[in-house]
Length: 173
Length: 161
Image (cartoon, rainbow over all chains, first blue to last red; front, side, top):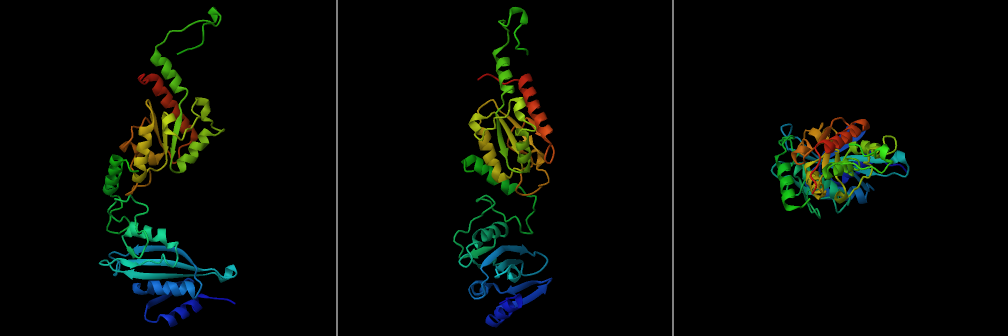
C-alpha cells in the first residue's frame, strides 16, 4: 500500500472545497493555502484521517510592503510511511491581516505546537487562540516589540536594555 | 620577589616583604577561575583547562562553577541582554578581590551579532581587566590573558581587606 501527496491533496479538496484557496507544487513540494478559519478542522482531518501525525515545524513570515495580507503562518506536516520512501510531507499556509493577526492554536491536535506557537508569538506578535500558555519564550517577559516584524529595526537595543536594567533592579533573572 | 632562602644560612633564612606583596604573590599564583561559557569560546576555554595547554601550570586550573569560591571570571561566549543580568549577578557574588577576562570577539564588542538581543561588549555592565580578541581566540591567547592578569595582580596588587 502506498500513499502519495496527490492522494492527500485530492482527499483534502473533496472534503474542504470551500476552505482551500490555492494549491502549489514546486520542486516536489506541495503548498496548500487555506483560509485561517478552517485551520483546526483541516489539521484535525489531516491527523486523524490521513495519518499526518507529526508537526515538523510551525513558523510565520512577514510580507510587509511585499503583499497583503501581511502575515503568513506556515505549517510543515509529516506523515510517516511504513518505509522511508513513503514518508510524505506537505506545507500548509494561512494568511493573516495586519489588523487582526490571530489564528486558532493547533496545540490540541499536535502538542508539539506549544513552544513553536509561543516562538511565533514572541517574534511576530501573532496570537494563537486557544493556546494553553501563550507567553514569550525567547525574549524577556516584559519585552514589548516583536523583533522579527519587518517594521522593527533589528539593531534597536533599547527595549532589551530596558528589560535588562529592570531585571538587575528587581533581581529577577 | 624571591622566596628562596639564602643558601648561606643553610635554608633557615628569612626575608622581608610587605603583607600586601606576599598576599598578592599568593593570589597571582592561585587564581580560581569562574568559567562563564555561553558559546563556542567555552569549548576553546575547556581546551585551555585540559592537558594539552594545561592552565594548571599557571596555578589557575581549579575551575569552580560556584562564584563564591572564584576570583577570576572568564566570560567566554555571546552575551545576550537576557543573559547579562545573570552574568552580572554571578560577578556580584564573587568575593573581592576579583578580575574579569572578556574572551572572544562577542564578549569584547558583540562580534558579528549587531542585533536587538546581543550586548555590544560586556564592559557595558562589567569592569573588564583583559580583552582577548579572536573568534574564538587561540588557547595561547587565553593563557596570555591569564598571565596579564597575573602581572596586573603583581604590579598593582589588591588591597588587603
